[in-house]
Image 1 (cartoon, one colour):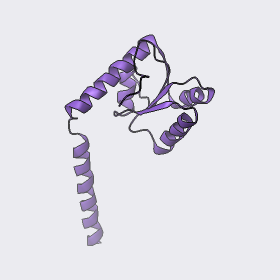
Image 2 (image 1 turned 90 degrees about the vertical axis):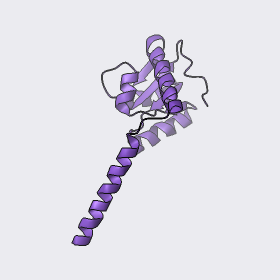
Image 3 (image 1 turned 90 degrees about the horizontal axis):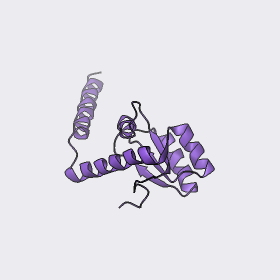
Image 4 (image 1 turned 180 degrees about the vertical axis):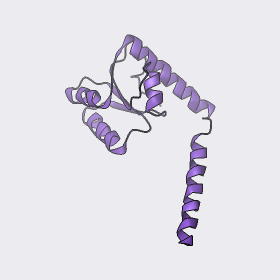
Length: 132
């Protein structure tokens, strides 16, 4: 039983060390990309048309109205792969948003979490232009 306790403590130490890495401040280039994506998303919400949510997003992909899909970083893997698959069939651009669902909801100007955002019309924003 001592062996299991030791490995449990080791695993706990590894988990805490990986959490420490994820809380480090992002690099300047990465932060700039996130800020530009947030500003583009804000402009889409103001001047364009977007759908927030997983179920509505899938409907948009199936009907062929969607132009782009943003997926939060903490979206469940099965849900993420389903959205990616439908986007591939609909020939829609997919962007993996670097923040979690709380950040994505906030970037859309909403006070709730959102793991999938589907853009129907870009409006004045250049978000639909291919990004490197």
